[in-house]
Length: 135
Figure 1: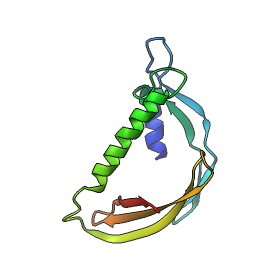
Figure 2 (figure 1 turned 90 degrees about the vertical axis):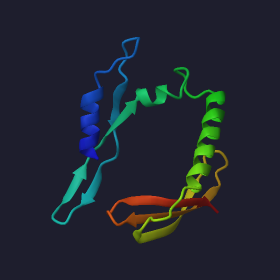
Figure 3 (figure 1 turned 135 degrees about the vertical axis):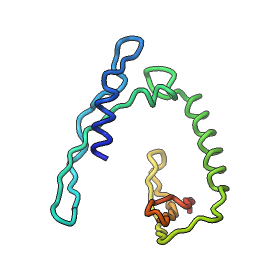
Figure 4 (figure 1 turned 180 degrees about the vertical axis):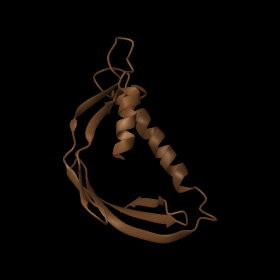
């Protein structure tokens, strides 16, 4: 992940907008994290990156998401999610499956919502989100 982040940064940080502003800028660092390997613990300090190229596709002005944009994106995401839930899993083989309830707190109402999440590990060793449902 760190190497992907660094190579992305090196490849894109010189890109400029029409007004000569950088499209990808660093924005400080995330909190240090320690990862355990079989031999040693490794402390990683990942930079925060603001990718304005990605947000440029959605945001019509520099002030952020307009109400119309939020409504449009929400409709698009709901439709994509409904199609994703109907996808055909015939022939998929999972060697391991996790099922867990994840609680997410909404900023709007402060209530916690439980999401049932099922993740499967395929024969190739890659993890895949199999299902997610609000309970």
